[in-house]
Image: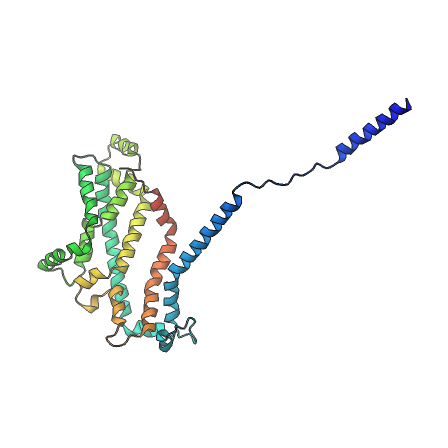
Length: 309
């Protein structure tokens, strides 16, 4: 009996030790390929950082040069950090040329063409996407094919045409065509977006007695605000940076936009690069601010534009 009691006591102690002992924690297993994925991710981020530095370097160089004295702007090897900071380059550059006139004409050109492209592009895109008529798709493909023609091919015929009707020397050749669907890319982008809108919305409106203009203005356009904002931003940037068009059709310096006005800083024998970079920085700032303010809408318009058709 004593032996049995000793065995029972020993067995109880062993069980008690097992119950009170903390559970063993096993070492985490390494997933195969985890280190390889981390290496790929790090390499990808390093590549993106290098590309970002490459793209931002010209902008940074422009800003630094705009703050340099003229000798430092043209010296070699280049001076990276200006000393002292010549902030006076900005007021001197803006007063050396009629910068306010350049800015006003640029803004006028941008705003009017944005209105023309959004109005005409949305109307044409609606006809190509929401209304069925014979030869619709074939004509749309022909219109898209015109994007393959470079501007230089139609340059001389258009100039002769506009000169015959007396438009050369004004902004008419640059503005009026945008009200008649001249931006094929904008029409294409809007057409693809309109085709993603359910046809049932238009059918329900027709049953209620709405005509095509009511459907277009009250149903389609409110749903297409991201796409409209996208093409407006594209057109604004294009008109702001347009150099060849104003150079061809404008023959008076009093009508020059910023893109042509900046070239006036280039002298025949010498150029004040500090002034030119200062004026270029001022001309670039509105585009940077516009992109950051409309970045969310711009990306949304691009991602929501479908490829149906």
